Length: 121
Image (cartoon, rainbow, N blue to C red; front, top):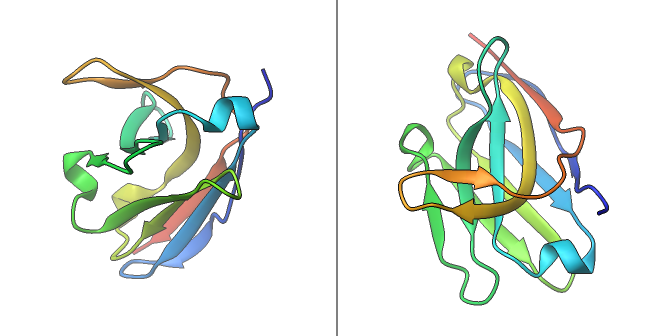
């Protein structure tokens, strides 16, 4: 399975914004797609996902109201617009297909390299 490719990370001051992008193969992309993140010394955690057909979205509590997930099905690309960034958002961000287990959302496919987001205080 071809891994997704994430981009758009960088260093930003607290309160700033970044937009992450993720491209994937046709086979991978025709699914609900999610963003996850892993901070140093912590487990990878769910951030947001978006359904393929109807575009329904779901967000983790820490990012609600600040992050927006979207997708362009014609470009096989999913985006994560991150506003009002906080130092605790610092992590490597990954995208993947998702497995929705109700209260828990996990990545289902192969993980890419991710993109580093660093938020300075």
